[in-house]
Length: 186
Image (cartoon, rainbow, N blue to C red; front, side, top):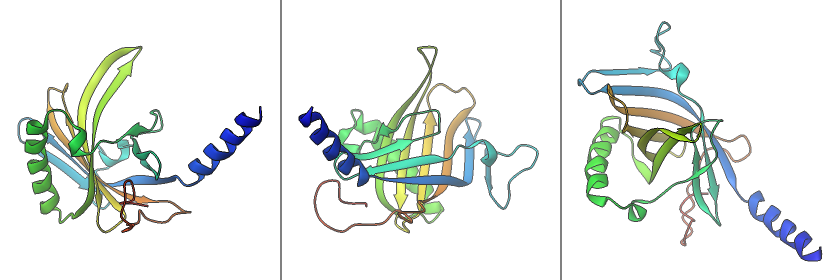
């Protein structure tokens, strides 16, 4: 029993260092396979068919011990984010990254850290949809740029969301220049 109590105290202390940032959408774009693009911001949101109103709020969990995690919406658990070095099909990812960097440049987005998430949605235990996400934290410390390539949709070739991230307790996502693993962000 004493070991269990010590373990609980240690793990509680470790989780207390974790930071969770809530990221709300402020701009969205959808690129159709036909080449047509639809985009909107909070200022230009279409009242009849608003895209931003259906984009969920997401969350980042930054753990000094475990790394970086992402939660796309309230119905999902936090999922571990990958660095480019951890991906298998590097050739395809590099092609995707070149397109993503061009999109970021067009919006004047300077990235601090880029993560990837192979994203799967299951319904009743069966795979319903798959996509590949690129989630970048902006060097202005409070935005994320999320590009999603759906793999199972006939009409849509890409989604792009800009989100502003903040936490009442921690403030915006901050840069920590202390060297070492998992210390790029705090």
